[in-house]
Structures are given as structure tokens and as C-alpha cells.
Length: 637
Image 1: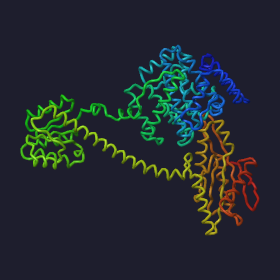
Image 2 (image 1 turned 90 degrees about the vertical axis):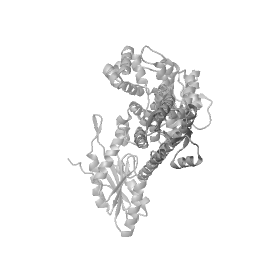
Image 3 (image 1 turned 60 degrees about the vertical axis):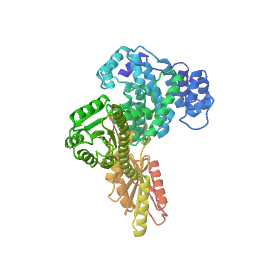
Image 4 (image 1 turned 30 degrees about the vertical axis):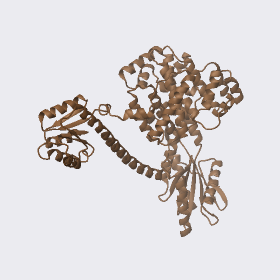
């Protein structure tokens, strides 16, 4: 096994000195805050770093001044992980792998750690300090490969730079292991909880994780993905940051951050990056404020990067004047098109969509003004800036021209200075119109997205995200409606409380992704096996509620047994293994002495408790003030 070879090498990144002592003390079952504080205080640098983390701006509360208070605030697990990370930063500032940029590696790791912590503080998906540690160590597998296989890994990195493609694939081809697999093994050795280590493993390709959308692992893996994209911004070239900004704005929108909120978040992270770099002695790069980067990314290359560059159409029937104007405009840096008559100009305008049009107002008849009117009659022509070229400055003629849609005018013969001034003035108009069009398009998009979001929120308020079943709120509403119908019509009513047996063991042994899959499969089985009129919902954790309308205890028992056997026959894949689950069911029917829905559910809960105590995988019934368990049947073949 490649990981065994890595471990046998004795060169895997590991803490040393005081950090090693901190890790060892924190691992003991009898570890105390005072014992850890005594060790930390022997290293002033580590103590200062932990104090800085505990007092970071991302958290509220009074500032702590002592190491012990910092450890209490952070927790022993976080202190262990962060101390380990800081130790590795100090030890591996350089190394034997020529193609591996150690300074850039730690600079990016620090930026990802800070981004993960800020996003964690925003989303509450996990402890911000735990996320800081994971972000700092998220790429540790690359450092390990560079340390153990310096020559081979240099060649892998050079090949990745030359050919592009997947670095992980090239690593597996050359070394039979990739940096993500190596990171996962090291995080396990470092004592990082599996609930965090799994999302770190998948953070470069979250779509491959298989985590159920909306679940905690799904939110954490996407948090790390966004943090890694913010980290990429720190090392990107000035030209490459435009693409990074566009991606960040898209990802930020998915978690409810508009451009201003995202900008404030990124600027705050970058500021902390520079502050932490001094403490850790990690080099960082200058990054412009997010607003400036986003403005640069929004400009279209070659179209508006030069404020004086436009598409200009010249309508002039005199060939020499047309040639002269076109030459003047071209020397100013504009893309120039020209036409000799209104019909030709209209066709050209339709094709090239000019931003500025110069119109000879001294053409025969009213051809120039007719062209103006024709442009203004179109949707796309309303935003074009029209400049009239005239040899006479009479009030009547100018009034007619402005009524036809002209924005400005120039007196012939046209000087280059006056022409440049008019076109420069036109630039303000063009930019305002395009900004207005962009804002209008965004408003339409926002309105459409808001309508969709409202519909989703209405559904989400009554739907369990993981299973797609109605949630507790919807289930209790359905039970109250069924109760009212039973009261009015004298119809029987029964409820079933269903709980997955030994579910914590499934999570602990197979991971939360498999646990989520079990709940999804079980929900599908319950929905498929329930009666048509039954209402199935998930009321929390691994517990489900089934409202059986118009069903007495006997018929509900038959339905409950059908559900139990359906679940018992399930096989859920967990890698190479297959997981089987069972359920316990508490049944309670509405009787004369049942006061309300709360009493009914309390009776069902009492029956469920009895089913658990009786050995699980069975049904117990609360009736007549007593609880009895039904004899479980063998599973059908």
C-alpha cells in the first residue's frame, strides 16, 4: 500500500517540540486545561498565535488575555489541531522538492484557513476554529508527497504545468496515491474528526462526495470548496483574478451573499491574511479591494477597457468628407464604419450595433433626419448617441433635429478637437445607458429568482431537506387536521412513531454519508409501503411519524407490520459492505379518554420506548391505559 510506504519512510509531516507535547497532552483522557496551558506557555510564539486565534475579529465576546482562557475558548481538540498546523508551518518553510513552491503552499493554506473560519462563522456549519485548522491542513497531502518523494513529485508537478489536466490523476499514475488520499490519511493520524476529514477529502470535487444536498457534510464540503477558491485568488496573477472574481460571485450568490456582502467578506479575509502572515512569517501578495477587482472583471476585453474606444458609424454622402471623418475617428482609437446614404447606414447599423453615429444633416432632403427617426423607432437604436453634422446653426433646423432624436451637434468643418470632445461626451451617455440596461436585466433576473426562491421557501418550510418527506411542522398540521376530521365524523385515527434501530452505530461505523443514505432509502420504503391515505413525515433525526386516517388499532397494526418488514428487507450499499436496518414502532389509537393530539403522540412515544426496551425491531401498542408488544413476524423471503 502506498500509504504504508509513506509511513515507513518516517518522513511524513508531523509536529515537533512544544507542539508535539501539546498534541500528546491533549490526547490523554485525563487532559486538563491547566496542563495544556503549562505546556503552551513554554513556547511564546505558539501562545501568541493561540491568543490571536481566540481573540480574532470573527468572534464576539470579551478579549482573553491568558493562555488558559484562550484554550478554554478554543477547546482542547482545536488547540491540538491548530498547534499541529502551526508547527508544520514552522518546520516546512522549504524542502528538497525543487518544483514545489513551499512559500506559496503555506501562503495559500493560511488564506484558505482564514476563509474557512470566516465562512464557518457565517454559516454555522461547524466550529470556525475547527474549520481554520482543517483549512490550514487541507493540502497537507501535497507537502507529504513533496517531502517523501522530492524528485518524483517534482516531475509530476512539472508535467502538470506543461500538460494541464488533473494533478491527482498524474500523482496516482506516478506514485499510486494522490494528495487528497494522502491528506485523508494524515488528518486521521492527526485526530481530525471524520465529520470534517471527509469534506476536506472531497473539497476539490464536491460533486463527487455523494453527500445529500442540504445535509451538514454537504454544506461543509461546499464551504471548503468556496474557501479554496478564495485561496486561489491570493495566488492568481492580476490577469487571472478576473476569472476568480466571476466564479466567487457565482458561488457567493448560492449561499445568499450579494456582491457587496461577498466583497466585504473577501476584503476582511485578505486583511486578516496580511496580519497573520507577519505572525507566521508567511509571504503574501497584494490584492486590490474586491470592488476594484469586480469592476475590472466586469469590463469586456477590447470593448471598454479603453474609455475612448467605440464603434462609430459615419453617415456622410460626400466621399472626401466621409474619408476625412473616418480617418480622424480611427486615429482616436475607434472602430469606424461608414455609409453614403440612409438605407445603407440603417443596414450597417443593424449589423454592427454602433454606440455613436455621426449624421450629415446637409444631405439632400431630410435623409439624415429620417435616418435618426428610423433608428429611434427601434429598441436597440434608442440607446445610440446621435451627433448631427451641420453647416448652419439655425434655431429652427436644430430644433427639428433634436425632435428627430439627435443628442448633440457639430458645426462643419469639423475640427479634431471638437470631434474628440463630442465623442468623449458621448462616452458618458453610452456608459450610463449600458449600466441602466445591465441593472434592468439584473432586476428582471432578481425578480424571477425571488419568485422561484419564495416558492422554494414555501415548500422548504414544510419539507424535510434530506428525505423529501413532509417535516415535523407539516406532519403535526396533518395530524391536527386528521384529529378534527375524526372529531367531526366519528372516524378512527391512529398514529405510528417509527425510529431507526442503532442508527448512531451506522453513523459511527460507516460515516454520515451512509447514514444519510439509510434515512433516504428508509423514507422511500415507508412512503411506498404506507396506505394511500396515510401521511408519512420525518419529525427529526431518525424518527418518523405516520398518521393513519380512518384506521383503528387493528388495521394500523397490519400497516405498521408491513412497514417494519419492508424496512427489514432493505440493503443499503456502504462501499463494499451492505447495511441492513430495522425499525421500532410505537402505535397509539384515538380512544374516548384521549384528550388531544399531544396526548395521542405521547402514548405513541410511550409505546415506542417499550418497543426499544423489548429488543427493537418490533411494534408496541398503547391502548386502554396499557402498553403491549405485538409478536414480530419473520421477514418474508
